Amino acid sequence: MHTNGFIHADIKIPNVVLHRFPEEDGQMEAPILKICDFGLVQIMDPQLGNKALMKTMCGTKGYIAPEIGSYNTLVGPEIDMWSFGVMLYELCVAYKPTEMRNYRYGSGPIPFRDRDWKKISPLVIKLINECLEMDPQKRITAEEAL
Image (cartoon, rainbow, N blue to C red; front, side):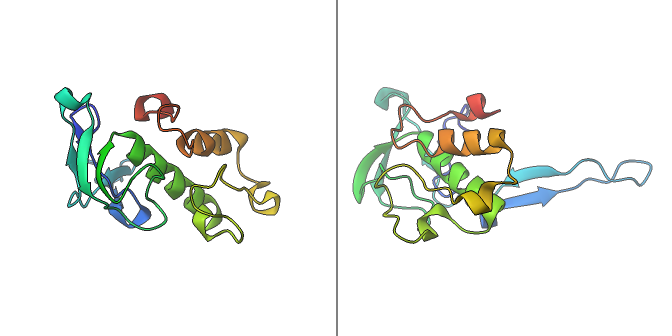
């Protein structure tokens, strides 16, 4: 999606679907995750350094990257990676980091409550931290995440 010049701008669990195809012998192939709901998509402009001018704040509360302003914000694929990180976090512990008590959104490093994360792979935690990097220039890209 990013390599084709699009920023989804609303990555969240309800916008990801699991698609399974039956094989010829009736068995099911491995499921494929697909992103849906491109209603807020932003188109990257090469003249803007492969960024998009987001005219109004859009996305879903709790998934919006901290660098998104209220209007006329220059955004890149980094906002999708932030939302992806929030989604991974939520898939691991069943709540978003923004739902943590005493955490102000965008105020600093994302909190990880030890008791909720002790059975989660350190590699998953590392990926989440790289997605939830406050500085969008240091945030992991989709290609790096793969």
